[in-house]
Length: 300
Image (cartoon, rainbow, N blue to C red):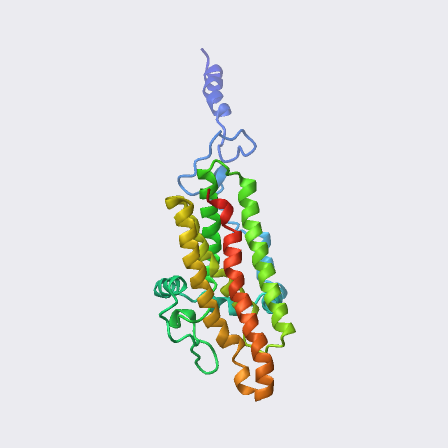
């Protein structure tokens, strides 16, 4: 073989050699090696700096910060306005007072509702012209016992209907709605009677709801006694609870409704005091009627 052919043979590998750094448009590997932290494609010398996201410039804009502060201020003002208007129709701050109870108060109040005959002092305690919380005074009205009593009464009614194979969701719903409607009617009738008799008292609508809701305690005891001991146990237990709630309402409302009579003259006191006494007895006597009406069909 001559020298020219050997030289051509020797130059052929050099012609096939390609510079890897110059082959940019060539096919890239299927997976990039990112273990060394270098950018894909081997461009290590090209540093583009930190990446700017679209929201970053928006947050760094002073006008955006001002708009966010203004929006937060509007949200705060809207919340305050909503709370103020809501408190006008639903006194949230007053409701907190009626639920300020503890376990000791609940136990004593339940004992007072079932056995009120030996209790002597029925006046509500005040501190700087404001009644103290129920957990500090057993005579203060609360909403915890009426609300829990209403829920427990509905559950006990469902239990009584279930033992008689008469339970359906519709009947239980009718039982709950009926008890609630009668409670509303009772409170509205009491408010109308106080207005017609022109009684200036510190009784509020929530107070009347609380006093009217205490009868659920006796209703629960009557139904449970009926489930355990039959109709005889139901009537005996309900009779005791009816007498207890009658005495409780008389001694409690007497101080609320008749408190104005002491500050009036003799003639006015004699004319209005009799009407107020009749009204107090009528409110107290309505409790046993509702207790029997809402429970007699649950025991057979």
